[in-house]
Length: 261
Ligand code: NAD
Image (tube, rainbow, N blue to C red; front, side, top):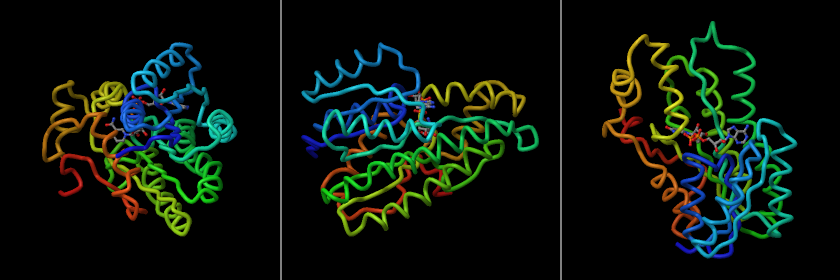
């Protein structure tokens, strides 16, 4: 599964699934670009230490990916640093839980910008170079909510369904050029995003934490357990490996059986 010499940009990769994917790609030999919107200097040290541990190069690039120009700038800065970008993992995303009639319109706009539009902007910026070189991989972190819906998550579900569709179009346009695009559709993975959502779910359902975990989060997952960020990383590495060369335009569910229901 060697990705030696490949350059991977992972959006929103200072925490959770993004960090898990970045770590597994570095282990597989890829040089890695860590990103988030904070500009926290600690991220420079974190990615340098992680890269050194795995014998690759790593940089942190600040970019608020809810803004189109910062998505483009992220890819351009990565290309300027490493000469090329071979793998883009579109992962940055946020959640907001509220019924439609009380859903703040500015939250809707932000979620669509970050969870959907950013993938278009990074893909648009990186695709030409990949096509020219005849190899590229897009791994879009969608969700079980890219395939099915839950109440109170209108913007998130709309964005993730959109991302699954965009992944298919990218796959078709890349097909003649050695460029694949696939979505990973996780069920619940224990990360800061899910931890933060607990409060909102407790409020929306008027119930306590244990009730929400059992009846809302894991209710539809046959396996009744959270997946890990390492498992998301392993799936992303597989999608970048030679074994997945002809897998494109599809969604891989890593959801403990949720969408089998
Ligand atoms: P997380 O909150 O742990 O990580 C999100 C990352 O995105 C962080 O690094 C954060 O700093 C970054 N980020 C936030 N706003 C940003 C912005 N404006 N610009 C750039 N980066 C920004 O969340 P997570 O659970 O790891 O989620 C990662 C992705 O996986 C999201 O797209 C989410 O929808 C998806 N997902 C998560 C789960 C789950 O159960 N955790 C399930 C399905 C899909």
